[in-house]
Image (tube, rainbow, N blue to C red; front, side, top):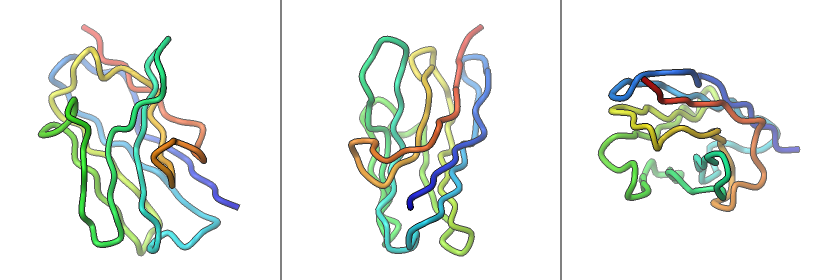
Length: 114
């Protein structure tokens, strides 16, 4: 079955950077469109970014120009490079094989605070 494990979160100051990773298994990763989604406290799950099998990428307006999604099919890994982080980026971040966020891993917490 699909297994996804996110890592790389942490606490950073505004303007800082983090790189999230997602280890995928249980499916043919190279054939899958992959997503990052996030959920802030008290808010609904929000789509952040997508990368398809041709490495075409898309971003939510709120992160465009600051975040960069990438993948390594040889390692079954998905990444999210996050720069110029803002308070409003604070959330639990998940990788998923669907824009709905289901299925997803346990998540990795990103906290942006001064």
